[in-house]
Image (tube, rainbow over all chains, first blue to last red):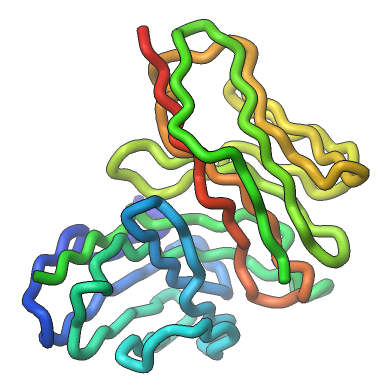
Length: 118
Length: 114
């Protein structure tokens, strides 16, 4: 079983469209993330959720809206797509230590969703 | 804020050569340090980690030592193989606590030639 799975793996769409990427983890983790990887491989965190609560919301256009229906799922919806949104989007999960409320462990990543906006 | 600096690539080596990829960091507190590897078309996988000063992480022949005095976590391997060709990311955990994920360096593309 894949630990962190995201769909679709590839997405090609026109400017102005709305699209969603789904992510599910079966590791029992309480924290999930979305990262964006640009064409130069640079990774930047976009959002994190801990037990369905939004924790991090980096400077991301409000066209991007994450939704976490439960702690095993974190979906990313993007409105009015622009050319600059073309990238690979990675979902990840981890378990945050309840005792220290710190992330001392690894992140488990999905295989990525390559979004191409034409 | 926290940051990670690693040598830019691509780094091209011949098979069986010695590898060093430099990584230095800036952080408040005492972060955990990681090396992740990304093979073509795949997501990131943890390669090794160290959670406190002087710890050495190791896996698949790769090693890195957490050096607090030089704020470094350089990745080394004694004899690289073609299959090691990938992008390598140095990262640190957030020291602010909570679900703040990892801060990544810009990645180093490693190319091993037969």
